[in-house]
Length: 208
Ligand code: T5A
Image 1: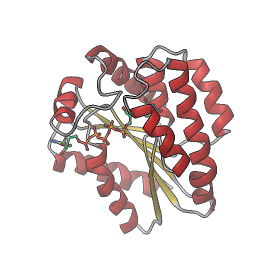
Image 2: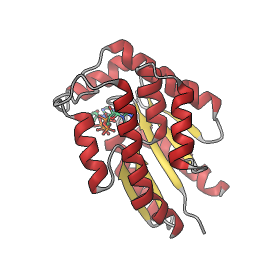
Image 3: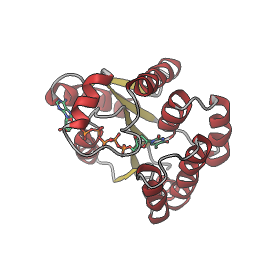
Image 4: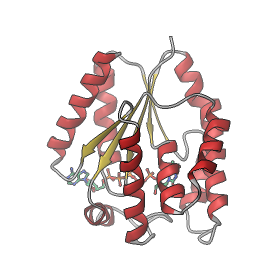
């Protein structure tokens, strides 16, 4: 039996890292064997590509280069890790996936969405997440939280209007695909965020 593919998305500072362990534990307690991974990254080769994408060595990288590197990392990640795990019936919990490409490279950088869709079909075939949790909060609050945490990577150095577009992109896609997307209000306390996540996961697992 094919396993479940669950992705976690959020704009900067939304609390993905903070909540991943919580989601992982919830799924394990529900009896799932969980493979936790992330994008860009997740395999040795894809982590090399992640370092190119997030580091500052290539700050002026063209948007198309960035897009293609995201999908190169994803192709490897799918072939070497995600698809084999799903085929073994495992639940894959992935920190960001192609929705991030639509949000950042599409809405943020301005690359035409149909180009991203072409790459998505090519690299993924028919594979799409079964459930996507989008941790949402106002951009200013997210930047404040992220800024208090660590030095900014190449994406975190973008301007506020870039992140407004990213957030708008996520919310627009969530509205277009309500069967898959669940929007979590992440502006509230951690306990309140995790209560929302528990409700979403409980409803989702019961529906399977
Ligand atoms: N990217 C990625 C693309 O452009 N295209 C793509 O296709 C893909 C896959 C990598 C970057 O790559 C880009 C997007 C990204 O810019 P990443 O590794 O996911 O992305 O990095 P981040 O976005 O930085 O995400 P993180 O998971 O590292 O962190 P978050 O979600 O920013 O948040 P987190 O958990 O570190 O929390 C931030 C701070 O807030 C606090 C935490 O303690 C922490 O200090 N916090 C709260 N405070 C109060 N109340 C709450 N409810 C809180 N929740 C967290």
